[in-house]
Length: 392
Image 1 (cartoon, helix red, strand yellow):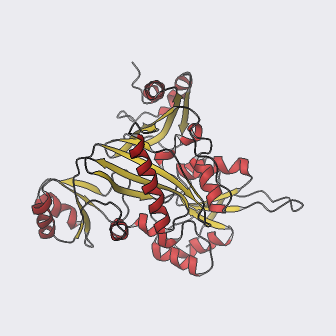
Image 2 (cartoon, helix red, strand yellow):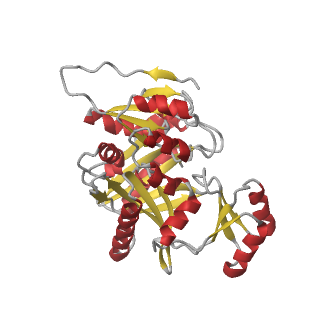
Image 3 (cartoon, one colour):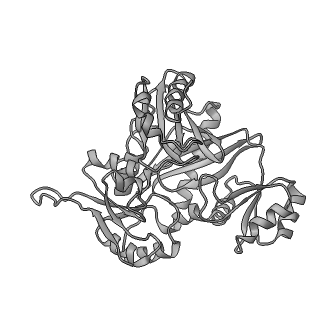
């Protein structure tokens, strides 16, 4: 399948050291923010985009437009970079193994990446190693779901093993008819879990290099609305012992699967303790606060880790940071049209991704720092409400 270079890299000055070249598979807002981190490090970033309208391409990142599903396109892209990394989960695992076998360096490795790409594989891998995961089964029939419900009760959570994010591919079902309807579209089966009584959701970011060096960011709380992260609080307002336990659990999981780069470990807090929700082996929405709120942003940390460079400090730059996602309003209007008014909110750091506006779509985020969570939250939400056209 053919591909096209949209933005070309300027020729390097041959008199100086050769700049590192990092290739990112995917070209959305995460790749866009990877580029912002790469610039001061003099790292050349190149993205493989499925479409020239993707966020990183529109921001001027050097881009090749071609299908991330096509092995020949992936091969051609890999030839011109020192290392491949990821912006999303949906690359064919077989293609990744082929690239690795042909001598290309991938961070994380295809074996580690599969733990995030396939939820069934993830549950099996982590459960077999003794990490806390919810009760689960792989079901290919409604009868299997019913049998699981007889043990754990309705409602249940059914998840497509691959391809879901921001709530896509996840459904809470209350009865066998709803379960059968979801199974009808997934002939290879679904992951079935109880709907846990969750007290809150937290996440821990880990950066790790190939030599085993790692740092863990402060544990954050993630507040979900309509199956999408809406608000993030750093640090999480949980007991210090629980935060330490979550950070240690995340580090041990990352070491067990031998993941490198930036890894997000999402966890449920229940009355029985911590339970693993999902993993993302790439920069993640739960780390966006770190651009302003940490000494080293998750994006700079990812670039450093991918190249095997020394990792930076993950420490907070303020007592509290709150990030709120900017979501397309119901009227279809574009928050960018109200950007000047939002920028008038002192202390609000606005990030818009250049994506086409539509209701419910994640279009950006706002981070605010403060002496406490409530101060930071009030500032962030004031700017977000302006952007979303909901200011009083």
